[in-house]
Image (tube, rainbow, N blue to C red; front, top):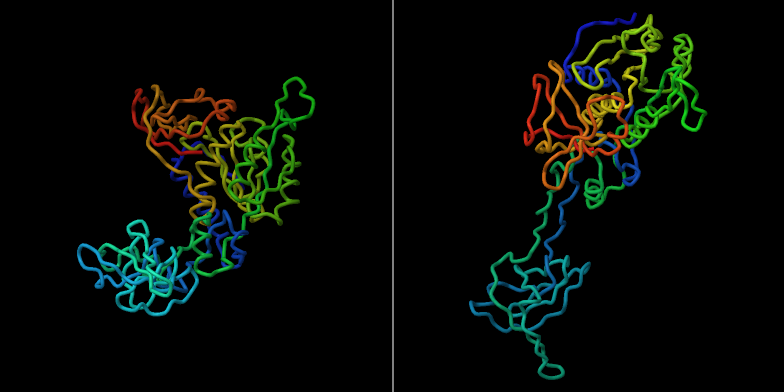
Length: 407
């Protein structure tokens, strides 16, 4: 049976509760093997160990001349020009007293231990047909402009740890190691339900007392951007039995149910009423906006109940669901966290963690966008960051440094 409580929990405690709720979804049977490009944006499911050295052989870092460093005394000398070494070729050994023209990335000839950049070489001299050309080169130390085998990563070393977010750089490394597929966590299937008799779909006639539904678009776009597989049901009415029936029809096909609205303590809180008889708890989190929250299971399926105001539901996703997904499954990537100075003073309610919308500017300051209200969608649209004001801070002056999550 659902429980409605007057207690308030901290942001950190509820974030941990969400993580605990979703942790059973991290299972071996939910790992799939995908081609590299299909894995873009997913989380790596297992450690990947390098199957070979990178680079796999010593090679030249520059276009230039491969030499034996001992052949060139201080002050430089003239060496005979050997056969050139193109990239992809296996060169013969370098004879003493010779210099081999070499391309960037080409394998070093056996015996050569340094590369002189072509910009440091005097023009090669061709004295007569059939006479070997020569080039004058300065002295360089052994190892000059050589990439040693394994200098990037060695065979058997950890290339990527389980839980790594797979972006272009990570997929590029796997390709460089010769891999074509990668084991990743399967994308979670989310049932997203918005509620409220006052809410209508965008494009419908807007009658008296009605508002357009922005929550579904806010959350679905956030979830899809985070790599989730989202099913939207349309807007549920404020009749609990209809909402419960809708959830039952979809529960077997999804991994998580997310609702918006109907989680407070008023008389018409449809989500709270629809959860009668199910293991779902409703309470307040010490956060503004986004205080009312619900968490539990509906017929064995994890449920998160977000508040109904647009900014509140978006902040709930960013503060609770997105971090848990990144922590457990490696996707989405965690929001970049920076420090910035407030462009203006702000006040925060006692005993609550406040999340304000803001824009981080080029000078390292962050400007507040709109007030603290949870209905200010236009302010959210102008923002590129969430400003974190921890519980216990009632006011911050202009210029105060704050933690900022970049959106």
